[in-house]
Amino acid sequence: MKIPVLLVSGVLYWLFVCWVTGAAEPWDADAYWRLWYPASLGLAALTGAAFKTRGWMAGFILTFAQLPVIWLTAGTISLWVIGLAMSCVLAVPAVAISAFTGWFAARSRPL
Image 1 (tube, rainbow, N blue to C red):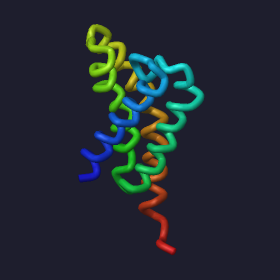
Image 2: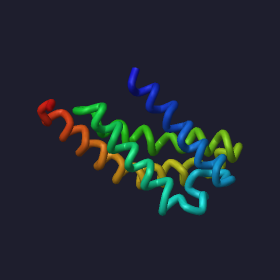
Image 3: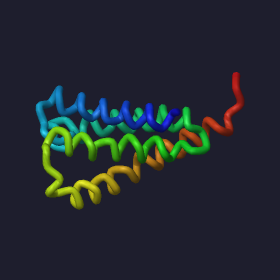
């Protein structure tokens, strides 16, 4: 149940980014590199801890949730291959962060 909730949450997050910034695609937003992408890395860290040993999936899902948003907001898939390639690159730090926090959460003792 966590995966569908995270996917919907990720899509809603990126839709929110497009709505607030007026950008057709999340990575076209003015503050994407300063605010929105770092915030998504923070979300990946938090959700990675919730996924524990499968924490890496949180970063992957949150990053790739941009693709359906691009399709919905831009209304085109003409640059789909480029968007997929960019998502793969953007997912690397998100997967690493969420995997680490998941690993850490799985090995931590409860207080």
